[in-house]
Image (cartoon, rainbow, N blue to C red):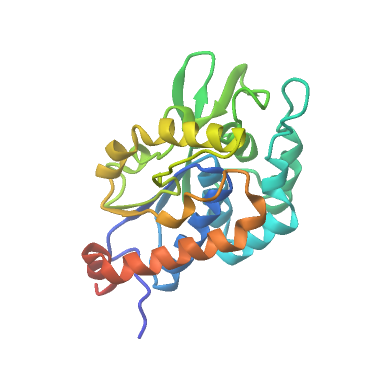
Length: 266
C-alpha cells in the first residue's frame, strides 16, 4: 500500500520542533516515524536543537543520516559548554561543520521551508530567521546565554530562542492546514535532586515549560515522549536511546491519533 501523500492534493503540514539539548535527537526519531508513513512537510520551524534537526532534514538528509552525522561529527559535544572555562566561549567553532553538510548555507536552497527562532538580546525580543546565512541563524538559536558569547548578525546580538519561545509554533499558524508539534521537554515528577547540574537542568525545564501549554494548544497534533525526562540536555552518549524513544512515540501517535489517521487515509 502506498501511503505517500501528494502534497499538491492534500493539506499543507507544518512541523514545530522544540529546543532541548541532546533531547532534541528525539525529533529525528519522530520525523522518521512520520516520514516512514508517507507524511511530508511544507514548513518546519525549530529552535536550538530543533533548529539543527529542521535545517538538516530540510536539506534532504534522512533522520538516521542526521543522527549519524551528529554522532560522527560530535556536533552535540561541540555545543556542550566548557563549564570550567573562565568566561564565555565562542560557539562559532561549530560553523564549519554546518557548512560541511549544508554547503550552500542558504534558507532558500533548502528542500523544505524552514523558520529558525532566536532572541535579539539587545532589543529583548523574539526573532524568526527565514533568510540570510543559515549557519549563523542555527548557531544564534543554539547560543545558551551566560555560557556562549552572543552571535552577532547585522550588529545585533542573538542568543538561544528557547528563552522566549522553546516551541515555535507561531510561524506555522496561517501557513499550514495541519500543525504537528514535537516537544522533547516533558517534565517528570521527581523527589530528589542529586547534583548541581540536575538542579540547573530542572530549573531550566520548569521555566521552558511554563508557556508550553499555550503553544501546544496551537498544534493539531502534539508528540511528546515522556521517557526523556531522565536525560540531561548535555547527555550526549544517550543519542541512540533518545532517537528510539522519539521514534516509538511517533509510531504510538500515528496509531492512536485520529487526525493523523485521517491524513494517512486520504
